[in-house]
Length: 449
Image (cartoon, rainbow, N blue to C red; front, side, top):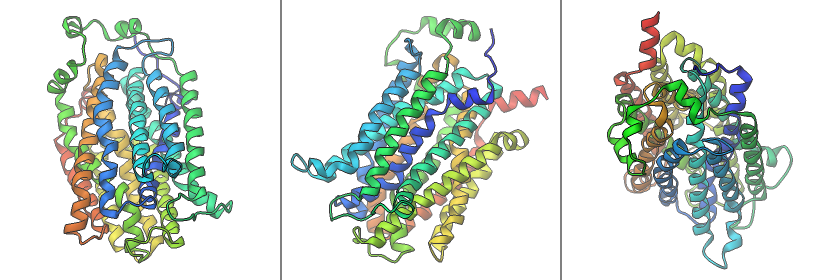
């Protein structure tokens, strides 16, 4: 038995839930630092508050991957997990900007940080089963297309999420200012809309996508001696980590430097641009100019996500022509130069050019490593290995979260713009490390040719 080739719109529905996930994720990335500063966080403390996000991912992802490999319900194998994650993430999206409502019980800053943890843990619950679902359902020669379509939907969702606060303020006229200690209503409403879209988009995937049953997967992949002698249990995650494929080990370093750079960008973009480009003091977090800077960062994040969605349309053709490794290397170099160029931008409008480069890298980061990885993973362990692969996304974020704030304070003299420059350098290092990666699917295709 072979996997059925899917039509474009079937592949589109397969990943449509990612539009809502990324809309919520974009709202978090563009605005969490802004919200935490409104609640009283200092700029050098921001990375510490963000640490809860990747830390929960480090714990949650492999466990979710392991159990999704072993689970079969009326909803299938992967769908119950990303549906649960979507519901929990929606709760976090609604409550984070409303953290001031809980000050009778604890400080708003603590509540906000807690909601950030809930959101990111929930996004983690939802994301990796989606990655595994693409690899489960699609034949190997459609996986690059599958992950590229996923990247397109990620880009669309992220553009909507990133631009929503700006649109509500500048097009509809909803105020983006509030009394000290409270989140502007335009931002609060954006998070609520994001929660609604997240639930709806996930349900579209749940009700339009059919997963292969365990019996069908066995007919497709054949029996596995390793699976027959393996004892069930979570401790197998450690064995799987020790025995991870060579390609995964090589990609781990590429992922490390890619996501170290991304985390620095997400955490420090708002204070860096407000200070370096708008000329505001670092303790100005309530003025209308600061809120305008925060809204503009949302627009910029939307730009790089829009570029990523457009670029993702061309990724399959580029990868077919150049190979996945060369495509990813080129994209990371362009993104690294885009990040570094932020330092030299004469005004906020020039930052749009920087975002074009970052968007090209972001599209490739979301597609190429997973397309390369999928060909090296045992099919029955797709979920757990996708979860383990997340280690190399969250560990660099945890490290950046621990050291990023003190480095900004003591090495950069409190100026967060240098954190963005280092993020660009990190992308360039990741690009150099792609050369060491073995892409098994590409080699098979070359042999056939």
